[in-house]
Every structure is written in C-alpha cells, then in structure tokens.
Length: 425
Image 1 (cartoon, helix red, strand yellow):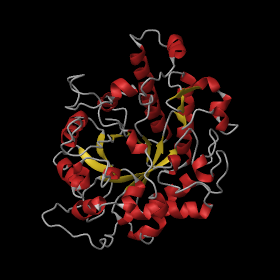
Image 2 (cartoon, rainbow, N blue to C red):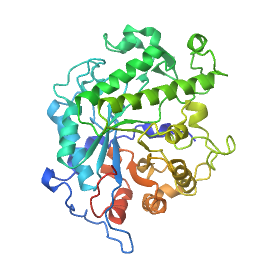
Image 3 (cartoon, rainbow, N blue to C red):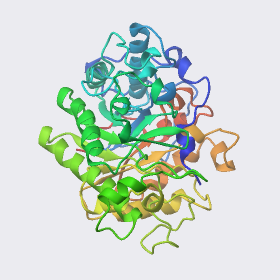
Image 4 (tube, rainbow, N blue to C red):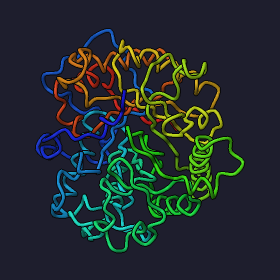
C-alpha cells in the first residue's frame, strides 16, 4: 500500500487555521493546563498522569499543504498563520512542532546555498520580507514547544522543467546533478558532490538557529513509479565498483548520507537531535525473517534503498518516527503488528521511538471503516502505551489537527493529554 497519500492535498483546511485556533499563550503559561475544548467529554478510567513523551504535529509547506495557506500572503499574514499553528499545539497540549523548512531544495530561511521557497511568495528566490525559520524557533520556544526543522534531502521540484527553477538554483547551475523521475526532479544520491551539498544546505540552519532537531521524512531514493526508470546507470558505472548490485550501492549511498549528517550535526551542536520518519514497513517477513508481519507493497529497504532498521541498530540517529499510517486490524499492514515490531527494533538501543499517526485519514470516506470511528486514534495511543519503547506520537498534519474532521484529535486530547508533558531528553 503506497504511502504517498500522506503528501496529497486535502482541500480547504489550511486556509481556515487562523480563525479556528485559540488565543496566544504566553511563555509563562506554556506548561499550564489549558481549558478543555467545549463538547469533548472527559473520560474516566484513563491514565492521566503526565510523563515525558513527545507529542508532535507535522506542519508541511510543500505545495502549501498546511502553511502558508497559499503563496503570496503578506509577511504579517504568513507570520500570523504560523503562530496560529504554534498556539494550536499549545491548546492541544502538544509539545513539538515539526516544520518543513526545505521542501524542494529551497529554503524557508535566508540560505546562502539555496533560493527562498516559492511557497512563500509564489516566486522561487523572492525574499518574503521576514525569516520564517528564525521566527518559528523563537515563537515555539516562548510557548514551551520544541521546533524540529524538517528537511527533504533530494527532492528538487514537483515538475520536470529546470527552466522553472530560480536562475541561481543549484540544480540549474549543476544540471548533471539532477534526474527526472515520476514527473519530478531529484538530486542524484549517487554523486558524492550532491551528498555533500545537500548536507551543507541543511546544516546551515543548524548553525544559525537554535533548532531542537533535524528531521527527515520518508523520501530518499524516490518511491517506485510503474514503467519508469531512475536513470542512474552512468553514476553506478562511475562509483559502484565493489558492490554486488545497484541496490546495494544505492543503500550505501543513503547510509552515507545518514551517517555523515549525524556526525556533522553533533560536531556543530551536540544537543541537536537527528530524527527520521520513514515509511512504516522496513521489510515484510516474507521477504526477510527479520521483517514485520505485513504484506506492504512498498518496503523501504528494497524500494527506497533506506535501511531504516539498520540506522536504529547502529545508533546513527536519535529517534525514529515510522509512519504507521494504518488502522488496527488493517490486513496488509496492521498497526497492532507494526508497533510491537518497531518496539523490538529500538529495544536495547538509545534511539527513541515515536509513532507517526495518520490523523489525515480520520473521517476520510475513501479510507477503511476503522478510520470512520473517532476513537480509532485514541485506541492507537492506548495500544502503544503497552510498549515502554514508544516514547510519543506525531500527527499528520497541522491542518488536520486544526480542522479535526470527526473529532479524532479531540478524543486523543481528552483521553490522553489532559496535562502538558515535556519531550524525552
């Protein structure tokens, strides 16, 4: 089952953020118990004691999925929408916002490496007149929230026309770095100069801002597209000597990106965490006895060339946040089978396990029956609580936290988040 729906657009939600959130919570009140939302019953028999756990939400900027609600808003309007998301996190008693700051090889801060993101002004490279990442860090911390800077390493554009990129875009200056695939442009992960460049571009933000973590999602080598070929044969011929096949070479390229980035983060600021949120299935057990009891159509190890289990076992990352985006009982990939599997992966390591939750599916009529029940996500939290290795949950995505189509997030907050909690550290 493809994960790509995570990134698909759900119309109309982001634009209503500012009108649906509560008032600003000042820094001194950041760990007070905000008032319960009206109409949400408090349920008895639940474990209410606050503990250290991550409670997060992703706020996506690519394609204006969450924020800004559309390109071309004034700087003041963009800032107001961003702050509204931070206030929503406080009201929901979350403690972490994962903000996408490098959506398509561009930047939501004044980067010396890459142009300003087009999702701010509608024109890639145009200065929006303010510093979104700097503002986000400052405003999040003033509210007692962690701010994790979310980067996409290799995606260059959601189209295949380099002439649409800013004239100074590195992908135009180095066309040999770029490959088209599946209607998009990607940096070629097999080129060492590319790997170094994308690290430099991302780590600029770590040097300049007090971010709490570097966060990557599930895109490494691109998801497979039927009938198309990611044409890196020439790169493999140049750099692939010594590997048994191209798949092993590609996995090594991804391993190098992860390991090198981890090492460089700690050299810059040892307290900044490095977390990755992969597709929820490493490998099916039918493919590998170490894999999960699933029958997923995508396996990160084989299809994205990302050995997510290996990164945990080798201790290269500080946290793993698998996107376990299926309901309890879903035959091909059951939440109740994947959470125990990931718990065993992190057992005995120093890597924290947070579970990525598909809030966007709740109430979507195209989803299975389990997602039509407002209590499905709350049951996820109950189930995961049986596993000590699970240290928190992250919800996709910000606008779904706000709109909360059938009250699934309300239910999670009422059942599990009566008090604020601090993230694990």
